[in-house]
Image 1 (cartoon, rainbow, N blue to C red):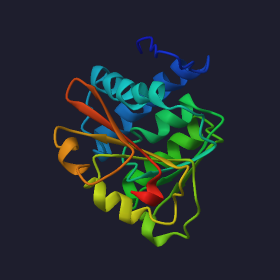
Image 2: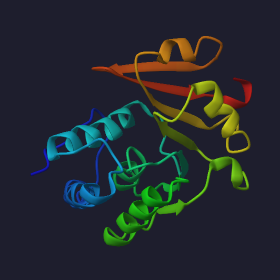
Image 3: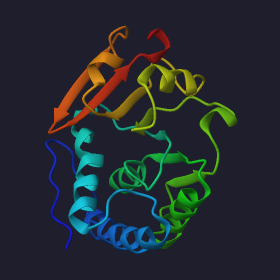
Amino acid sequence: MIKTFHLNGFSLPNCFEQSAQSFAKTLLLYNKTHNITGAKNMADIQENIYDSIYPLQFLESNPKNAIDIGSGGGFPAVILALAVPSCHFTLYEPIAKKSAFLHLIKSELNISNMDVKTKRIEEDEPKSVDLITSRAVCDTGLLIKLSKGFYDKNTIMLLYKGQRAGEEILNLKNVQIFARQKRKYILIKGLDSA
């Protein structure tokens, strides 16, 4: 059974927990044959779900469109799409088996505010978005370079990082780090001047 998730100052949709449970069951089943994520049991998946939504409480505005770079097994992008139905998410995942899983989840859960692209972000035509997310893909500086053209002065970049987060942002402006256990969440605003 999926646990109940609560965030300070952010309301999750009524259907979130049921959708998250369906996602978790499909991921566990799919992962047995396709090995797309390190989350191997329900407890691991619940932790990844909470990790995905935790930083929503630090966003000062509601994004209308977002991209996720290297979406993998759906953390954080699928979970964010379920948590923020008013925002349209475009997921970039170049690995075919992971992209296939993301397409399956979109279809099974009828996630209308999410598209999946089986390509790298740098292979697509850029357009400015309100929010850019990524988890454990590459160094922050490289992520900023890869997403050039997708951000403007109003875009927020939300990165899910580990212990080296502080080192990766030394030369950046308008940055905040929020910590939870071993996870560091980097929030960068005003990317065009970063």
